[in-house]
Length: 141
Length: 92
Image (tube, rainbow over all chains, first blue to last red; front, side, top):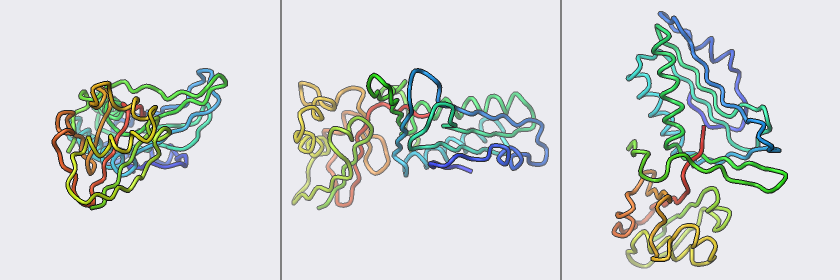
């Protein structure tokens, strides 16, 4: 499942679906809205492009790390502290591939997928600055 | 010729988004965006520097593909293009 959506997702169901024949490890990454003195968070995406890029990242991760299955669900809209933002579920034959594949995916998402977060704070709202200025995220197309 | 310009995040707050522009003849991408951004000084200043160039951190896409900064000053927009302008991404 590769999705950008407002709704939360059933992580348990994703884990079960990820268990393909030969699976020895499933790794779940669950990015959560952290309690950093914020009230809520708003997420925005250039959806058409972001979805394509998530799909390409999933395919790259599968090839590079011999993954059997990849799910990436990135939420958008208004979220509260403790809510799931991004869920990545990968499966592989062995744990080194599963850990490495999961890590690869989150780092690639942070480099270049067009999604932004705005922290809604008591003392004023703030767009979270991107970690990678223009030029460091190589085009996938 | 109709071109759509989309801004995201802070740029969207300042300038709006899904802006349809009608042009009679070819126009360079940077000039097209500049014309829109000039509507609001704060928006213009967020995107362009004092020399009228895209600020270093600004990302520009044409039909879903990122452009190199230098190309924004030479690429001519075409009918049906979708131009996106946004700050560094912060997903995940």
